[in-house]
Image (tube, rainbow, N blue to C red; front, side, top):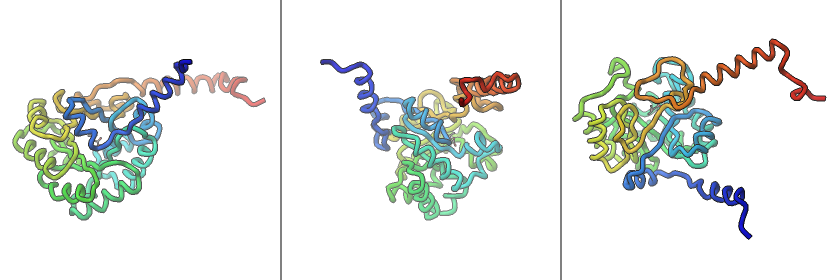
Length: 278
Ligand code: KIV
């Protein structure tokens, strides 16, 4: 006798939950398969994104802006990153979880970076850390990867450098960005974020590197894309960056749900008999 569709579907779904690993990133690039990455900072969002088939969830220090409402990520602490990353890692069964090392938790020395990367992996169950910077971070990336902690690099616009750069500005110096990206790969990173750089430079870097490039504001020719989850879901209500796309308007859904709730409470419609114990 054949199995029911529901039973077969269940089996397929369970078999499909094969966790994405660090080596899978390189395999994806070699097979020309684009990688999908978005940020999340809490259990329910991470669970839904994981179920939806995202390859990688980044617990970004953008949480300083989109969760804490600050103008930049500089004040985010390691303790806060660990708090959020633990929830995200606990929620996921498939997506690779990468955690940003926040400002001044890795810039001091390779030893400081190694110690804090170890803390992140041990306390959260995440799979990798991300840090910003190119050539000047070479020794740091080497120290972390030598301890078998996978590192995702990040060059181009690096938000933790916002004071030096003078704002969140597009980066256009091709030679500098290419040298930085090559140094990150050479140091042992398994992937690299290219943020806010012209698409032709992103394409040259993607062609030059063996590791996958994950673009944000870097055009279509990267090996994958990353967006801030709150932006792509329409949960951020202020400034919306031009490079980001809103795939839903969750803010509007929340606004209208809360308005309906307020009306029903005020008019005595809620709670009805079906919500009241006998
Ligand atoms: O912190 C973050 O969300 C990031 C992405 C924008 C790449 O670094």
